[in-house]
Image 1 (spheres, rainbow, N blue to C red):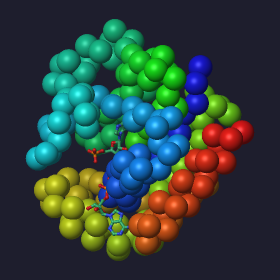
Image 2 (spheres, rainbow, N blue to C red):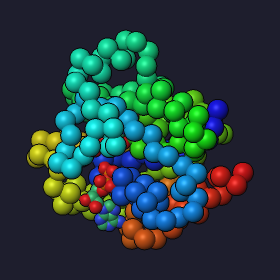
Image 3 (tube, helix red, strand yellow):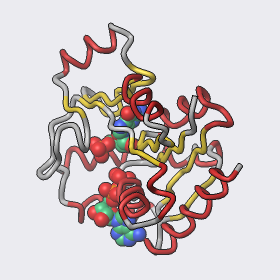
Image 4 (tube, rainbow, N blue to C red):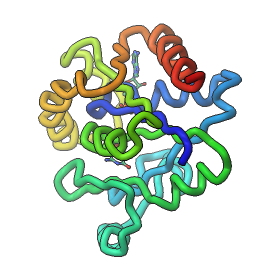
Length: 191
Ligand code: ADP
Ligand code: 5GP
């Protein structure tokens, strides 16, 4: 078994932005890591690519993979929309000798941490405030009003779970948050 670093937070807190900055910004340690591509039953957003951002499955395909026991963990994160980590994805990246980086919802993060224990670092990305979170979700321009409502409704409970994670990174100034993230990742990898 290899090492894992997982990022959790309510939708819109900046997980994807921080992960992309850490992984694609020329940081030498990033070469040791690889992003775990999740499966989802939601439709691709504009610009998202199957097999790069997610493995996009139909609801029926997703259910069949659940029944086959193919998932390490999965959640119906929003009503009717499932997300999950395929066992084959983690094995593929560990076989390649990589530290696996996850972007998962708060429940998924807790489950993966429980599964991997000390081999995993769990990072909670905290927005500066709920108002800023709402603004960022709107500014991202990817969600309908209904979808924004579902995401915000879920966020209050998720924010309460931050203390259950190894580290909390407040994503106010992005550059500072990225630097702090790199520091905690480096400390974990040195252990
Ligand atoms: P998540 O992956 O957690 O759903 P995203 O990474 O998609 O969140 O970020 C949500 C939106 O907020 C995006 O439009 C992103 O560009 C913006 N954003 C992320 N971090 C910051 C920051 N520190 N300051 C301002 N805007 C940010
Ligand atoms: P989005 O639709 O914004 O890409 O993702 C919505 C939520 O699903 C985010 O909180 C994201 O972290 C979560 N998510 C993405 N992949 C997985 C996964 O494999 N497992 C779990 N549990 N959640 C995931």
